[in-house]
Image (cartoon, rainbow, N blue to C red; front, side, top):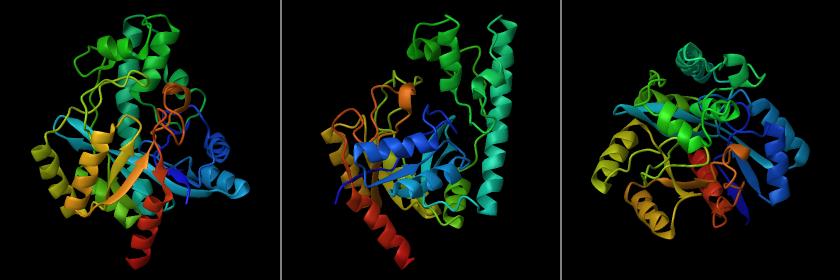
Length: 294
């Protein structure tokens, strides 16, 4: 039935392709469907849906929410989001304001040390863009402060670095329940590895033991979690096997996606990830059938 990509980012967060460019790439790649899941925002969804309608490809409106976990965060993807839902829009604006306040303070810290980072540069002329630490990394490379993204995170953007400013996250319960209220399907992005994503930078989530993961999923299921990402660009066959079994154990719908960011993750291709990713349309069909029964 073809393949899909249910985890992508545009210029409305930390991707380098506009929503319409993303749709064009999806068509060129032969994908049957694509979801846009920008960080903490749905501002790119109208352009995304219009482009998909013009190009005759199935488009799923979504988002990727950062919710609090321990002293960091985990990510919950919401698919089939009603991007006009008032409650979701309100929560998204709160999250963006908190992120903006953190980013402004980080930029000020850099300027105090004569590294001229401004919010205008970070948004690259798009005031609706959600700025992440990857944006800071790009500018640090541009100004010759560091040679690559991994170096930027190690020395300047990691929580232990002097320029890092923590931000306030919404709760796991609030994130999941707001996605549900907006008609969405909340999916957990599972932190399996403790590797460093050298392409977008920054440490990935610390690896969880199976016991810790199961404890977290038990909690998230109580809040209404419906699915889990079982196919991802960096996952090995063993990783996929492990997560498929976890999905069955917790009766979670399977999902998958590349986490495509354009040139911010040059080794990650839309639809195929690092070359071995193939997310079957069946995953999307199962979600649609679930939604129809609900």
